[in-house]
Image (tube, rainbow, N blue to C red; front, side, top):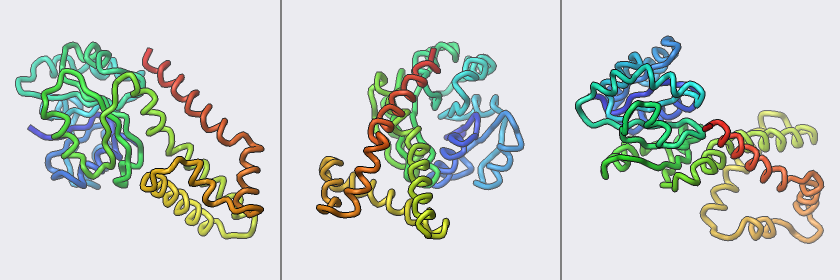
Amino acid sequence: MYLLGFIGVGNMGGALARAAAAATSPKQILVSNRTAEKAVALASELGCIAATPETVAGTSRYIFLGVKPKDMAACLEALHPVLAGRKGHFVLVSMAAGLDTAAIQTMAGGPYPVIRLCPNTPVGVGKGLIAWCERGTDPGDAPALIDAMAGAGLWDACPEGLMDVASVIGGCTPAFTSMFIEALSDGAVACGMPRAKALAYAAAAVEGSAALARADGRHPGALKDAVCSPGGSTIRGVLALEDGAFRAAAARAVMAAVERTKELGK
């Protein structure tokens, strides 16, 4: 039996496979994809094994379901005979936004153990956030999975009722942050800085600010105030952001994304 098997290696599935290969022997990892060439290319890159979805489902302890929510029912229906015929212990690992663990069991055709993940793309560089919950698992299932994926980033157990919110804060924030980094660099370019340097500076400043926020423990407002000298440059920029409803726009982006995530699960 293989330890980890991936069905679907798009952006998220591929990022998780890369994180797994950094912490686990690649020879314990199977990868499959609707477009087989993509799985073959990733297997060649990581040194793991390309396979069919049926082989992944039939021989992996942890079966990662890296397919879109709208495709999950068809994917699992095709695997019903393979899953029903399994003799040893296995766990379905779902990354599909909006689909809870009970829905995965229903689509899979049985009360199989399920771990639901809400990961984000920074797992590919070891800086991910992976919220998770479980249903019907053995006590050692989640710890063994986390150990095998230790290189992915921060793992945090989350009540299933909050998983849709977790999927947005974790999964959507890289897109929101990328837009912010791009906007910051646009401003720097407008003021004469070369694009490559502007992007490098903006990304480093955002990364450092996030690390400070996690390590410092003070409210983000206090961290902001610490940089805003009276009559200085930062407070002038803060007011310009407020003119654009920056904080309200960010909060409403989260709310809109959560609403859409819930729709995907219906």
